[in-house]
Image 1 (cartoon, rainbow, N blue to C red):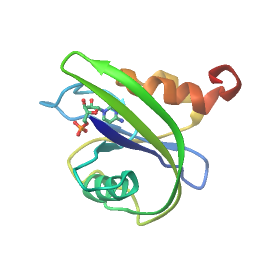
Image 2: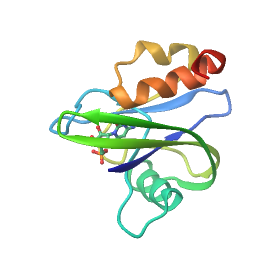
Image 3: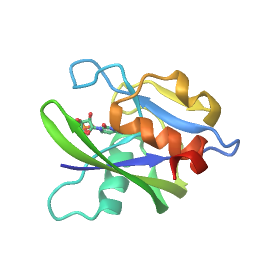
Length: 130
Ligand code: C5P
């Protein structure tokens, strides 16, 4: 399964996390917002669609940051993470999910899905990650 996720920053450099709601897998975990790439979609189309559905914003520009292969108990995914360089609108939790704008050095305080952890490493200590 191909999953896209966004690193979205505000003007102060804080990064947006979204909390997975009850009833889904990994409920309660804080993730970089995103979701499944549907058949026929490019990764960037999926990123724009997912962020529109979940947050009410449109992605105007994004650059690949890191791709994380992850085996979950019921599926294997590749989490394809993009750094969003420009977006339109103000992110709001449109699916009743909580949002948190988080300084990069505080990202480690949030419980995350396993696939999202290496993204934090890439953001906060790129030298060690490479
Ligand atoms: O959000 P959705 O359930 O469509 O995501 C598909 C799969 O990708 C789920 O297993 C979810 O846990 C995983 N995922 C992830 N990290 C994200 C977004 C989704 O591990 N940031």
